[in-house]
Image (cartoon, rainbow, N blue to C red; front, top):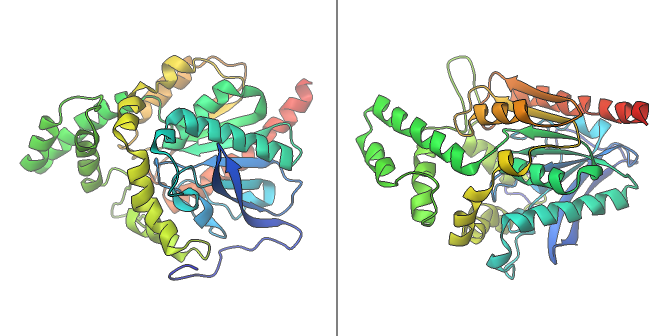
Length: 349
């Protein structure tokens, strides 16, 4: 039961689907949330970011606004599936081996979940969307299993963790100079240059100053965002999350995945090099104010991406990395627009 349970923003009709399932994925119990006005709707699997930040995830039941989309209208058109990835939220287990917390395993888990959804809902293909770190999982999932998806939407798409860190470090240093923050500048200089592979201490320096400089959220005199804290603590309002689930999201799961091995290996992920082509329509959506994940890498990648399908880049003008509620409504509509790809597939048969 949530600490401060609130009324849901929307209700699913009785003949729809509104349930949490715990299923075995990759040999461990993991939890998914399924919401839909009709079990006949096309399936949309949404991959959250982080790692270990399950929003949108199981705690999002009945909530319209999430950090990357609205859901009230989405569930009328899709069977929407949010998943707490291995080791976080309601998918945390004490007996999960830390050695299993790898990027390859997360991609494998996502592939297994995809097959579960295809079989459960008797659909040859499903729709795929992802936010932030989830976009890396999404792109490698497309590479390995292209025939299982109608389309892909990458929201705050990451291309290279290492290159994004280089850009982020340069931005943070300039921001520290602008503010006259010599403590920050000294720490950022001492951290060296990306890739940060020495361990969590080195890796965490940039993240520390990114958080202090609010790279994830944009506010000004006209644009008012609810903020990272309020959005994250929305987990406390979930009637489906226990105190332990919140703790596992912010602490236990965080410690579990950010091992030295994970930190050493994540800079090796390079979508530009490893996924030069895809066989589905691709849409990237990015916040114009985002200085946490830098958009030009995604723009450059999309311009060279080889595909016989549509590819689009869409800006959300009010948002940084966590999207403004006005923009999440627009993102929701962009996701609904993906349904056109089913019609295109039928025409091309």
